[in-house]
Length: 374
Image (spheres, rainbow, N blue to C red):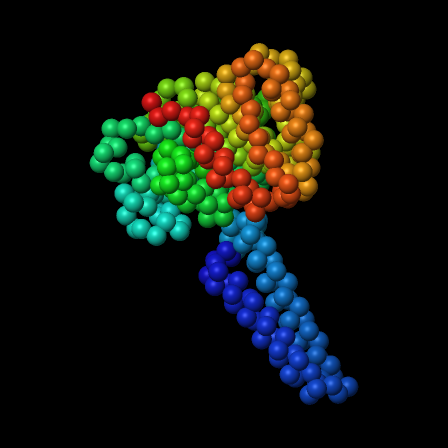
């Protein structure tokens, strides 16, 4: 049973309840001062406490998706590992499908009514960055009447460090997109879901690091090219959007600003607006002040020509640390003549999955309305 399995959580909760009941029931028998009685009391208390902590930890992990598997929890995860390949890869295979699955919660097993999730390996033609991603194909992709149609696509990014699988089964992007399209609230779209950490464990903040991983170029050029070569994605400007939360939100806004011909719309949920420099990032800019300034979104809006793109930002009045910065960023963008901005401002909501799940339906509707499929 996996770490995120409901069976594991139920088993932990039942164990905690049974141990608690057992402790209450056996306590009178263990009231003596013999070493066996004392050892029994200690063992029961420790076991009860451990199962309670395990239950709380498993429930928190279910809600927020901190770890995707036991191996991930123990630092032994390999399936989600990615590499930076500094030698040219096979130019004919920038995308390889490694697994196919159903959309969680969709019910119908058929692709024409439930859609499909492809687990893929991506290799950048120019950057040689390799990473794992999940591609959601809507039901319409498989229906005969759409066989000649191309579809708009959106890149969806996690925060740092994040797990790409959490976008599928914790934040429910495919399930939500399928439901909204079925209700006519958004057009059918392809979603390419991955984490921005393409050179782990380093947090590259979607920056082209001098002498290091060219992360921005990977997302701006290599990823759309690889996906477009394999799936029926619209090839003209206006076909692609990008969404992210936290670090992924910063990346989404930056990529839409820096590369408006690639990304016609960018949505940053709980985003920040300037790349941090800390032990997880290292020296991102290597003393290049121009590169550092361009990575500061508020500096970019103030000093560079306004790009023709649409942005969406989100925050909450209580619970998010980016609230004031978000209001300032909105005012800066409103003062430009070409860049458009929208916002989702909640009354309260923390920096967590529960808050983002409240924002994702509106975000998908918003980005769908700004993309074309031709």
